[in-house]
Amino acid sequence: MTKRALITGITGQDGAYLAEFLLKRGYQVHGMVRRSSSENFDRIGHLRDKVQLHQADLLDQLSLVRLVDAVRPHHLYNLAAQSFVPTSFEQPLLTGEFTGLGVTRILEAVRTVDRSIRVYQASSSEMFGSVREEPQTETTPFWPRSPYGVAKVYGHWITVNYRESYDLFACSGILFNHESPLRGKEFVTRKITDAVARIKLGVQKKLKLGNLDALRDWGFAGDYVRAMWMMLHHDRPDDYVIATGQKHSVREFAELAFAHVGLPWEPYVEVDPKFLRPAEVTTLCGDSAKARRVLGWEPEVSFPELVAMMVDADLNRVRKEMA
Image 1 (cartoon, helix red, strand yellow):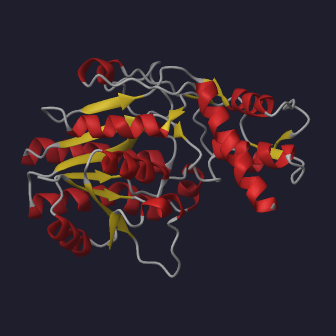
Image 2: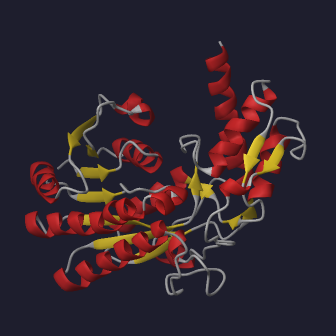
């Protein structure tokens, strides 16, 4: 029997990588998209004839119930959210609705329609915020420092609650920062690699950044969606930290990116206070020992390889734009 998977947030970075991963394993892949006046399916353009898209909304309970009932997926991956941290400070209520209560609506739809559906919830390292210990594990207390992080904490614990209350197979992946050439330009990693490409090719002069000393545990998104799949194939539901266990500064990311194209970073980078957060998360570093031990998961792409991959992809994009 062909397995059916439903992905909310299929048009995002993780959704695109996950859809491709599942298709290669013979899944029938369905994706949830929001109704809008314009379509933005760039990341899944090459998959449009292979996936089935459905309109629904995390803010509309009835649409979610109808979607789950129509697709009847074996696995449901909830990746949809308002996921840009700076925006969460500007739109905290909307972030709470999508990123927090939206999870409850997904779980309630599954509970209503078919409790045998296995659910993956995308939790986040931003939940740790002002970290209580380092590295962070599944038992590290949460101290979120943004409306996004707070909403993710709610989504995480409501998933645990539905698992314990209704015996749902519901897992949360506490994913640390994961990047790729498909990352949006509003995120600092892609902002850097896109600027490096444009500076190298002579169409941009400066790169403005915020806190250069912020430390993050960066991995490759393609490695992390594999972990999501592994969680739903384990014999019991649980929560897992997914991380490389190595942290690097924004400065180091920029330095590697510029070095990849043979340029020093200092002449081109400027610190702009408008890119600083109201409440900063200074360091995040995950301990994925549990996922490695229980699931057998390991990251495959190193930090230098990730940076080079992203810079090369942006160089190709900018060259095509110039042509």
